Image 1: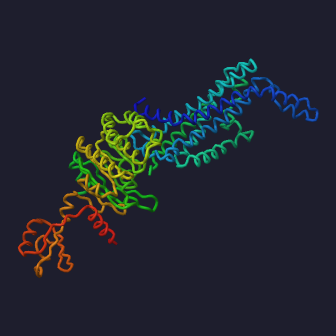
Image 2 (image 1 turned 135 degrees about the horizontal axis):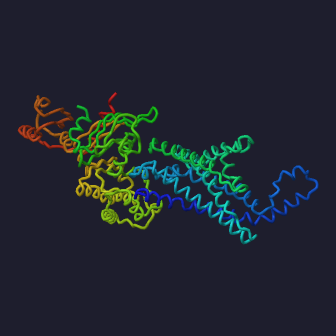
Image 3 (image 1 turned 120 degrees about the horizontal axis):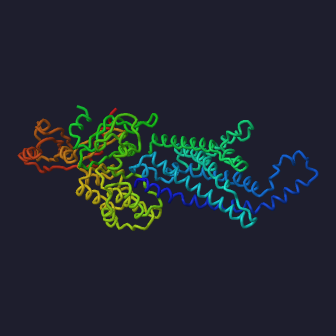
Length: 259
Length: 309
């Protein structure tokens, strides 16, 4: 790591720490909260299953192992709270990465330093993804600790391995937001635009034949929990797409006038 | 011989050379094909009204803005192809306050130290001392003047070969402005740094610059040595006791005569002392050389340019 990269690294760590703190607090609260709702959820579900007014075919739609602790935690953490929060946090970090420099008025100072714009983008991406991954890990640790204390349940290794596809998808969404961020000077507008683009990518999730192509479905990696099969291909594809988006953002920024 | 050809002949003596340098934003032309050579070691004042293209020109030189057409070389390197090297060897101070808001002077020094191989902590601290700037106060809590001072201290401590200063003294009180100019002059004297300074403060430019470039409507309309300019722009005011010589307007060295009653204002060129001696032979009531300051020359240049079709 060159001295210039270290200088940028320090700057980005410094500027991203509050966003990280908020993201980490939210994820820790969510992670700790999921195991605590198990009994409430189990009670409600038990009542539903015993309710004779509900048709049997509807009851059969529910996964038979839904009341198992592991299934409950996975479906409410990796398949819901964690991936959704990571997507939101990735949009917030990505959309403010470059647009934030313009909004704060620091773009002229930053981009007149002897560091290439590509390096600036790469360092921003690396630091932001580290912050997001750290927040996701802290949330998952909070879930694991609470599950252990409240229910004596030890989460399996798949819960930690599941962070990899979550982060690969998060990097993809971050890349989308970063591309938008190089084109707009206002981080709020960039964030809204990035959220709209990210929403478009959710459309395949609602189409059974296209479902497996959805980045959000792949982030939740159901096969990892059910079969303990690590989703190498989706992770590699999402990572490659994320790298392409970051490279595209760097190229766009290189051509942009900092007026 | 083109500007570039002239520059190539004396590459070591040239800090900046532009040929046909142009920047367009859609239909609007911000910089309109300027040809410009800045000698090494010179202090050049870049003056002109708002919107003349001064800031855009400086931004193209430091690589913030890409030229639409033409070329520019800074310290012998192309501004597009070698922007990174130029930025390492050039100190740039933008017109707007653009330091990171969380930086203290101490943080800013640590940040800059890693970016510039020629960085000098000693020089940074000396300059901060001149301004009396605290090193633990973040930029977000600094006044506009303090931010300008910190920005200059950081720029000078890079020990650059070239300083590009965009309206550097805006927002400073007269006392701080004086200190500010002294720091710039100190860098020139100590390091032999080349300075290009855009400014609306013509008396400041006059104080520090040895060259001046007048910019208007995206073009450099006049560029020359400041002393030569002022010398060439000198006038003689004369009041004769009787009638003036009938052939006064055709005397050698007299370019133009403006008459207001008995007062004659001679625009002259060449040996002004010989002309004064010749006028004294007519025993006039008054004969004196009128020096003109940069502000008058600026308005004269602006007026001429404004009258162009």
